[in-house]
Length: 374
Image 1 (spheres, rainbow, N blue to C red):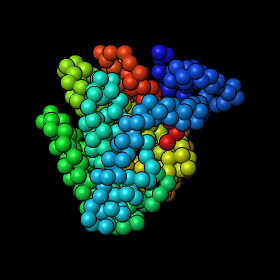
Image 2 (image 1 turned 90 degrees about the horizontal axis):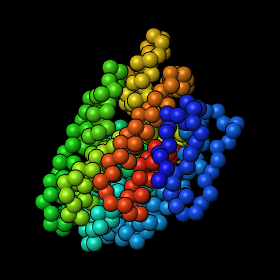
Image 3 (image 1 turned 60 degrees about the vertical axis):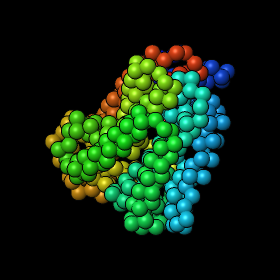
């Protein structure tokens, strides 16, 4: 298995791009870097050429399980209340990578689980994730997600919050079916931690004094904790020893952090067509993400003042100037390097797992998390 892509070296131009090892395993010729590409844009080149195929390979490996998960999600969304049916189906069917459910399926299969609860718990994880999206969009007053109008833009804030509550409660109903107190413990702690992360993010909003440490604490709680739980419960289902459960939990935590950091990168470097959101949406909402925090830390006094005002005021004013500062201060490669370190830690955490195609897929999912354009 080849070493993971070193984003910091790609971004600085000291190492040519490389491909993930799944194409090699499946007999596909790897792509070669174009010699005329500016090193600053190399990360985007790697993303554009590798993302679609590799996530497709992972989906193929899990095709039967994913089909069952999707069917269970559709069945479990049913309610006698028409608005719940309309809104929940809208958000569930509006796209998304299904990475968190895939993580449950991969970890359970890597642990040789033979039952059916991994299907149920994968759907549970997706419901919890979807509920957080509904609540996030209300808090952020977002109008666009995945290229579509948000549920709150379509039905209003009240309906979005309440249907989010429905999805949370339905997830816990489904969790009971697993009949496993350890899983209940993990998931109850997870949802509580996510809520804490949401509140911490709210406190950081429009606060230009937010430090990198404070920001990393938010994403560990708000984003990475659900990835951690998704990987961990696969080990619980497989009755694995503490060493394997801890290893998969660590893997999930690090991949979740990497995933969020690349989202931060894409907020300033990807096209709206790829991400389904506008460039700089986080800044417009007053969120001090890592590229902005780094730019404040290393920028000139005038650059720092401009970004601080942008965070404090929100909106899209001065977006072009902010993007120029982010580029000139190296904030994008800095954030990408941080993401790559997390992905490397995730891959290292897989060491105790026995060799299998599912372990290989977990390895490649970590690489996908930092080599994507959406």
